[in-house]
Length: 205
Image (cartoon, rainbow, N blue to C red; front, side, top):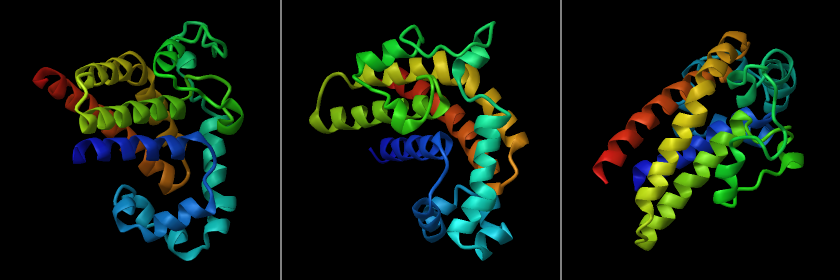
């Protein structure tokens, strides 16, 4: 169960970092959480991270970097990478919507400030939701745990792994702050290792 909680937390963390600009609360928590900070080795050594207050750090560096890798120079949507026309499908025809609907996963577009359901952060949040469902099923002794694991593996392989590594490699190259440099590295490593974990778990159950 500890492994599943760790997976859930990592999907949630990555989703938050890649969804929209960060806030002072997040940076303050990061600065004061040694365990969380271990995921950001370059950030720990960044002089500005240790010298500047959270608001200045965000306004002058980190959030500027987010806009650069998410809005100005790169497109963090699956459709852009997998469709021949590089179009972003904003409606119900988007291939991820069937997965979301089956699990009653609803995207609040206004709150998330994304234009389509296949945004990287939304897909990561959906994986977080599936892992949380797995945890609840294990705790309740339900017999659908195997199905949830299979769905996680399927979604990871049919969607996230089809395009997210390409986006993250580009985002790492474009990033100008250690936070996003570390976050992109962490995301690639985690997705690949989680796929391996799910493959082993699926065979075992």
